[in-house]
Length: 350
Length: 290
Image 1 (cartoon, rainbow over the protein chains, first blue to last red):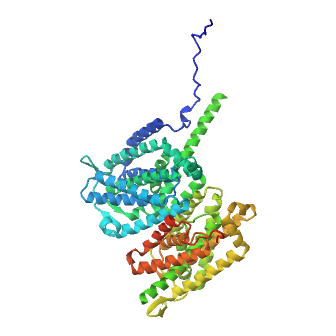
Image 2 (cartoon, helix red, strand yellow):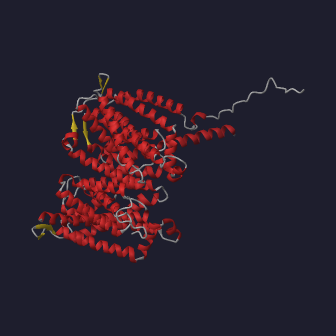
Image 3 (tube, one colour):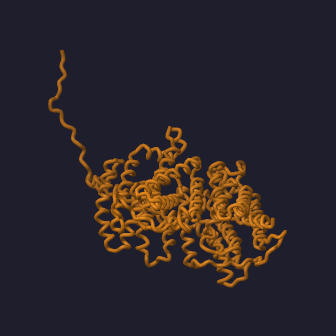
């Protein structure tokens, strides 16, 4: 009879030593890391936002605007960045959401109902448009959404009962939650920070979800993804709906904050601006829209001396970004960190 | 009845301008694969260059128009060199975004140069009008139809009978094979940008005397021209011309008679419906493009 000898003191497996600067090395998508990053971001903004906004009303305005543009741009990131849909209607959804929420609150319903109606209706509108043009690819989709935007702008300008004379709605009620009215910009800041944080959390959940992987596979090769069993059209439509809902949310928030709503604030300049935001920040990262919005909002202030040349600067910048930073700031920073951490590891090994 | 005649004449003239505008980006699209979102602002620039040449420089109308078209050719070349050539190997979507950037720059430059106050452009045909069965038809509209007819015939000859045209058609049909066969894509691309810009400028010069010249002049025209191109199948010259005439007549007749307040909505609606129900266009040309 033989017995198996078990070594009572088998050597424990030693974990591999961590290279220097290991924490800078990009990690695979991890929901907990994302959520921690969002928490850290919220803390930083909660500390820095009032400090920046406290210096002047103009700065507080810019900080608030940055957060709402970030929300719209996160939605656009889902549509354009993940789904690869070249949509021209995100600013239309912003205007539509703003008018809807203003109309709902004007009818006597609470602010939160207005926001809910704005998000739900823009999502449904996007669902209808997305379903109708689901087979349109690339430019055809762009042109179709361009057409939707043009029809919307004309309707907004003429539907006085809904949007007000010449598409100008005035006297929109300030945001109100649980009886607390956010009147001053400094108060609205906290509401917007909460909204942005919530959008980022949803974004983080999508980043780790199968939907993201399916959307990217369908974006990169629709036919192969379709043959592999990915319901590509459905994923694209769902992301189009979610992204448009964020557009509606952003427009509604801006409308209630400013108290006025005009479709000219959501015209072609902002449409191009959203592309600039996403390309500048990075269309492959959830943080791209946030970074890009910050630059986009800060630029007019930085360039106040050459205000007349604002649109020229935007155009040249967009071109320069496309040429010099094709992956955006977020991706460039990520690559830089990767290089630094690899160099550190190499130095340690040497 | 006189109203119908006037609207029909207006629709044909509108369709003729649309045909020139639509052919401009069709040429570019087929030669380079790019849909140029700066086309509308190029149309506006053409009109402003006409104002500059005839009013600011004081040139007679026809030489002024010719100078404007020459400058447009140079602008087309400049756009190709700055916003297209450096991006030749980038994904097409990046190139399209660069055209958006070009549009922003052009619009900004016009605003700085000419201001935002609307201007007027004199017509080579004068301010006279023809009366047919009680309907008044401006000489400018007749001029538009005549110039558009000449331009379309010239383009048909260019693309049907010349080596350049054959190379563009080869690129439009199968870019990779065309390159392997030695088609000079760079030279063709540059020529396409020049032709496209000149056509955009011509459209701007023709439509401007009918109203005021402002920064939004070309934008609406571009959307309607998109509709015409999509309606015509985005591939054939004839299809696009027919699509442009159809859109012009629909806008003027249906819009003018039934929905005067919403006539500008008709082109985007037609565009959307064509993409939904017949994305290959009403005139489907599969054998030969352009």
